[in-house]
Amino acid sequence: MTPAKLTSFIAPPYCGRPGGSRSIWLPLTIFAVVVLCTLSLLIGSRDVTWSDVLSAIGGHVDSIGEAAVAMRIPRTLLALFAGAALGLSGAVMQGVTRNPLADPGILGVNTGAALAVVIGVAWFGMTSAQAYIWTAILGAGCTAALVYTVGSFGRGGATPLKLTLAGAATSIAFASLVIAVVLPRGDIAGGIRSWQVGGVGGATFERLAEVAPFLSAGLILSLGSARKLNSLALGDDLAAGLGERVALARGIASFAAVLLCGATTAICGPIGFVGLVVPHVCRLLVGVDHRWLLPFSSLVGGGLLLAGDIIGRIAARPSELEVGIVTAFVGAPFFIWIVRRQRVRDL
Image (cartoon, rainbow, N blue to C red):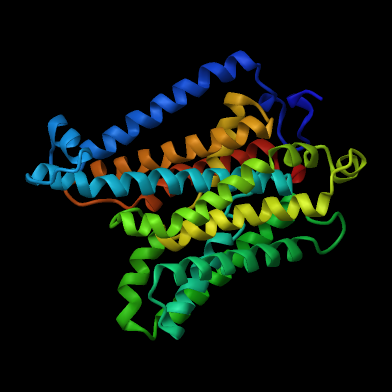
């Protein structure tokens, strides 16, 4: 079975790419991510030199420039890891649902995680990072189950269009609930509103250490589901005929996506459209084989969020524009293009 036959929802331009093309794009993508990491360390409200960067990486913080770079290192790593997690979770969600519009933000999963965190903070006095992460994952999982259940009602089951509409409605409802929970609590309103925008500012190595096990588990489960997602792309009946345990495969992959987007939302806030844009771009580069698509989605996702964070620092210098706003500017037109290209009646 060739990669070009592994999908039933991607239009003809997203056909499989030959191995030679993949071998070219892999080093180019890695090089681009390294360049973006370097730029993330160099660009900010304070100008720094290459010597400051090298000294700070070596652990020196004697000068103001070195201290500035030292603060940007965890921020750069968080943007890289969060972008990789969101890009990967979007690719997995699109594979599980066979929905070209699937994305943690569009399906309401990020908003469900945010609502759970807000309730935990406002009603239960939640403060620890571990509590944030577990609560966000629980909220993301419950929301994913709710959206899939609602989208399954009626004839045809969980079609892409019904899942998208159910996710949009859930996202709007939960966003309203977040406002309702926060309004009476002036003591937490400012922090919650800032967190809701979605950003990577204020990152520390301690926060990275808290979220790393969850992202690692989600990464391993996602990459381990690549072959199963290839089978699911053929349709449930054919996948079952090939010996695949469809429900188990879909459950494991979905759990991995929930882990990734829930943990990322807990630390960064809800960042939208990364999981939508990245998989479509990666299909153009490497085709639809998930064994290639998932690793590339994580690389490109990390690069996209790094680029968005860098643009946010430049656009509002000496202040900053949160990366969640930048990705919204990029992702919203892309979402409209996908809808027009796929045509609503074909979804």
